[in-house]
Length: 316
Image (cartoon, rainbow, N blue to C red; front, side, top):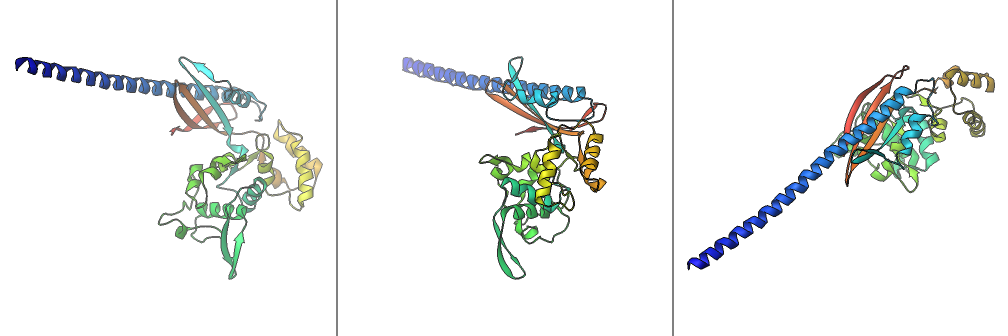
């Protein structure tokens, strides 16, 4: 009897020992992963530091995609920068190279979305007649209804009654990802799919709404209203000539070009563009083992290269 009890006790102790080993092993793996996560976060911060240094060092009168701040960071997508036991990649995105959704006109959004084949298919009523609207117009009107301060929907827009008890922003967007709340805007439309860019590649909520000729894609430059009185053929010829001069190193070069190309162009048209940018978004990814941490920072830079991080967050 005593022998049987001793055997049972031994079996219990062995079971407890193996259970402890499994728990300890799990805890060790958890500790190791937490340690890797912290290292990955610090590695991503190294990427942010590199971006800030490149922006600080770039103290000329213009910004374009041939400069170090853009070229060196884009290279990290293919060749990650080693740091300790990990590595990072980093991107610097010029917010002036995108269309500001808080200030954009409907005609600009419609033009941009139509050029790139983006939209939401919907039906609506106009003067009592049922209509099927084209996707770009619907997408533009829903975005503008989400941003504007009133509760009056555009013909193919969406206001309070379309949000299922929630309310649209009805004010300036603080984060572009808010557009995912707009009815019809899917993650694919926001992030890009089928070889087409997403809204996140075309729009911004930061900056003063002026477009940098040197960093914006052609469709965004052409989406800026004007030149006044030009038909589509004249506009195409105008932008062919203008964009062939990119990068433009000084704003005076832009003014000289506009006056020479067409002396009747109003000065206000040229004032919609810049060649120097003050607002950038930095996206850094730190990697240690199989663990990744992503950081996003909004950076403002003055004419002297001084950089200030005005928003900083870890991206899920």
